[in-house]
Length: 291
Ligand code: IPE
Ligand code: IPE
Ligand code: MG
Ligand code: MG
Ligand code: MG
Image 1 (spheres, rainbow, N blue to C red):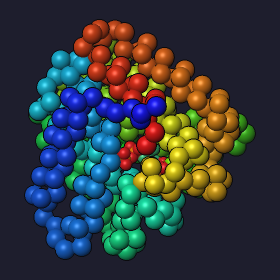
Image 2 (image 1 turned 45 degrees about the vertical axis):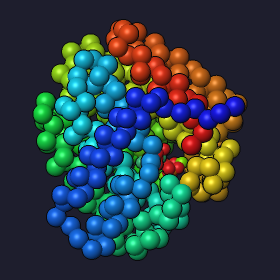
Image 3 (image 1 turned 135 degrees about the vertical axis):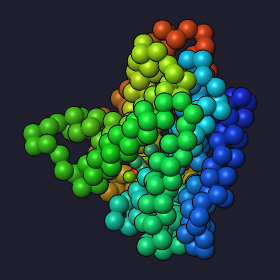
């Protein structure tokens, strides 16, 4: 069985995103180790799923790549910031990311904290450059970033509502720490394309399904893959006692949940018609990815 891949046209969109991100850093007024750390965090690989979702969701409701590119770059900047801080010794304490040393290992902890701060601030600036509905896009990005941070607090410091079940806690962690940025990617694509309310609704429903699916798959990969294949440490969630889908439900039930969410995602796309075919293709990839 060969690992699933994104389509050739998706790869071309990812190339546009990579180019935009490189330009953003080239033009940023930073130097020395801060520049090197930011480049390490932002330009060193990564699947670019969130920006691809922005561009594909914009296209699914009739928008253009050019109009959605600032929003696409902005969400990847927030994602890169979230990973740099996620890997810090005080959070997941990881030494490898995307097959290379993490930012704090390569540049020191102070620089990793500051490089993360920088990426977040750049994200806002870039999002304000969206040619359509910039205010809605910036607001969406900020709200999702707040949710991501809330999710990271739950994941790392376990400040849960008393009396909630493991399953409720799991859903709250995943919807926030990972789902929020994925849902925002879809909605920002919608805004950049001036989507109608019913279209935005469909994109939001699709985003929620693939957003939860994304973290369940990430949890499964942590349990079932090698570090060499996924480019980051494995077995860490269990070791750290994290609440994960495989940890709470087991591997088989987690895989079944991925299948259920895949069907839910497909159903959400129905109102968008044939223009959403590339999104359906992306759901397949996201459900079956091995890294
Ligand atoms: C990893 O995200 C962190 C999660 C939110 C699960 P990705 O799997 O998108 O990481 P990259 O960007 O491709 O490295
Ligand atoms: C990461 O979740 C979520 C965010 C960065 C917000 P994980 O901690 O599971 O991500 P990986 O496995 O380190 O990529
Ligand atoms: Mg984490
Ligand atoms: Mg982590
Ligand atoms: Mg993980």
